[in-house]
Length: 193
Image (cartoon, rainbow, N blue to C red; front, top):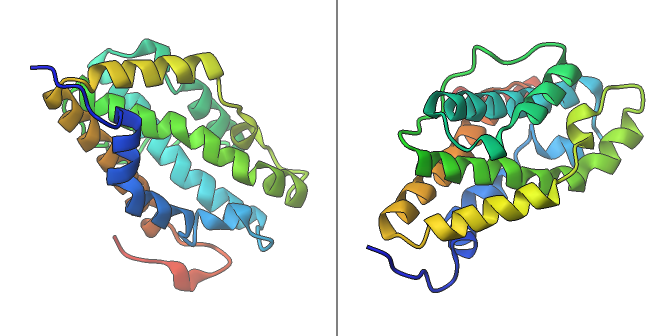
């Protein structure tokens, strides 16, 4: 059953994930990337959150054997370069099908726009550190293809529910990873997940 979504799939996802998405902008671990208080230790903590998320989504993509065009290998490689290790022991992101994965990939690739908001701060405050991840730019062709795939798939009501579930779970996963991270310079931010 196909039903045209009146506002578009992207707008729908933005609306239903707005609260958790905005909360992540104020998360003590992630918001430090835009702060004048950024240190090497807080930078590393934030990158570790991104690393566990990207590694988990990419593992799920490989396991489901789909969406090769939207692979996160570049992001995972850049994070391992910045951190010197990869987060292979990260818990899996709970996604049960390709449509849920598509929602999570939308979140992961959409985060490239967020990187642009803190790129200058990171490179200015930590000029001697690796910036492979924050230096990655949005691949406009890949983004356009991902959005077209998302919009097309989301016209089916069942697919849309799965895509929404995937996007929501992706944001929640990042939130849990950030809450579990202790900022080395401010141990009082540690929250037990």
